Length: 209
Length: 223
Image 1 (tube, rainbow over the protein chains, first blue to last red):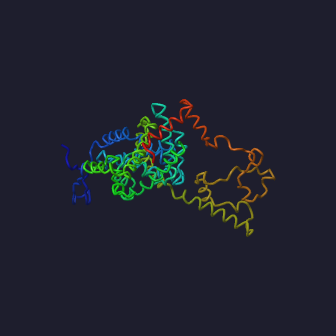
Image 2: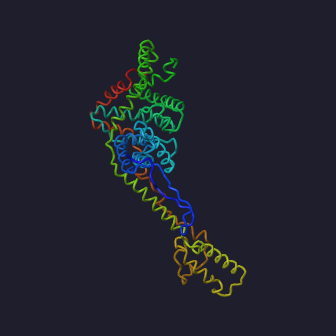
């Protein structure tokens, strides 16, 4: 059984050449001696389970697949530094998306990309289609095109909210936590984004008929 | 949107399987008699199918974890290097820091001497020995003196205004004026090209049929 405290240092006050005036033992909570190994194992598990979704989320936010791949690595590298702050697995997905969104904002700023600019069509064209059957390929292509057009008409905030709710299935509480909002704001933003999505779907169906 | 179930967001929660079992049973009973809620539920389901179809088509293999580990290890090594570099920067001597000031002072003194006319020989304009040492201590990239001009060339030895001497060279000619943007500059593809690429993998006569079926698959019913 691991001790609850560990002797980390002895602080000495006074002249060391003379008599020791006072000394006190500094005790700190044990910080998991094998944390680096565990953190890497946890991160590897998270990466295996969620890296694809995080990368798709970043691709949708940034509109650039290569940039999204780099941002995904940065997201998980940052997650590693704070991985001990989130204990429950079910909370880690929203937490990861929150980090990813912050990374995307920084990448946008660094690349001087306009905040609301999104070239969904270009991102779509760069994406290989991996569905099994031709029908599924075409269905996925058309679905991606409709989603890209809807995302193109949304602000960055609403785009992030819509993606987290509809594409990644987060609850409103998780969306709010990931984006740093209240739950009420998350509901409103998703509702507004849904209106734009439904308009894009209606336009597609009108053109398809 | 007048129904209470929609306003409260219960339909949204139901479509995402977030509603409790008792509430779900109540809502299902309500759906039999409320056309508005039934229509809204079809819309919600259509949105979910849309994103699911997209995710299925874009399903990717998990990218390698190694770059992430390299980035993590690089971050820690980089922070150590940064702290070492910070210590080195702090230990730079004060003479090197004052060297630019010495250079500026010498230039100012030389200009003043030439204006007043008290400079009698080139040696009078030379800065003191201490300043020469300081000039040598300045990193070369901080002082852009350029190539020294040959003294015997009269064209170069003539005084040239500083603005002209430092102006960047600009190539003016037909190769610059008439340059057309290359294909690399424009990455815009014609929509028809994409459609052609898409259809090339399948029967070119079939997409319209598929698109029609896809529409039905997303929506379930007209919106």
